[in-house]
Image (cartoon, one colour):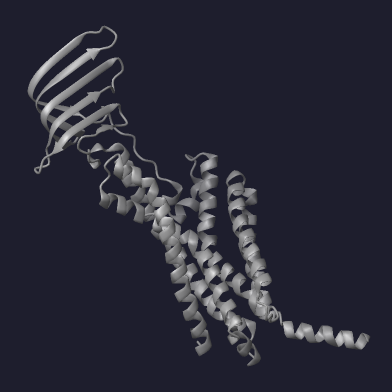
Length: 375
């Protein structure tokens, strides 16, 4: 690679890292707010909170990567024009295609990285994230009950704990069980301990009283005990978590048309998701080309390249909107799926043609020669 290409590529890579990490930090902050309630109210451990939010990063990076490379390439080439560096390169005979090679190379490298992330990183991270989310919502042993607060569980059980002991047990425990219709059970005990068994999590009460009232017959029973155990969750096996579209690999997605057990809507979603895993990484190349093509083939303007940059930004927004729109429409009808491919390959082909074959100086001289002949 020439020295000038290395110089431009280095600026693009450094700028991309700064832009992408800044956007990732902001989006991580906004996404983590959804889990704050689990920490403050449900007692989700901080380490589990950090793991769940970090598992969202591959998906967010994959979405931000084309936008970040577009912003970076646009900024770098615009700065080269403002500092007259690009003007000197063009005066030395360097073509727009040669000047665009660093941006194209960075786009190709990011496209390869996104292919790996979309087809290997995201499915693994999504699978781990869904497992953790399912366990937090369905496995009560993953929760830490806060001292002095009532915690209401999904199955109609309310738990109050006065104090956590150093040995892992709890003291001053109160449980109100309304999981069964027309039957209310209240348990109070001096101490208790959470126990994980084969049949599910249970709680062991020590030195307490069990009170039961039937709301239909108004029959009241009470029982004093030294040791008593009860289930936390509803009796019965839990439903197994179904795999989402993001957790499947690309072969499963593209072969879903042969799976007769899937409904038609799910088959369409799988095919569209498989197609997007092939196409979306290419938008790193498309947006890198789009960001530099206008600045490289347009004439120099001392007042700046605001108009050219505005047109490129609008084109990027239109292409991104087309990707989202055609993806949603293809999920309803696969006849729209070719438009999803055209939305990616047509802008790429146009940008490559303009950089490779469009010579603004040649067209300017031809127009000037024609005007002089007519005069």
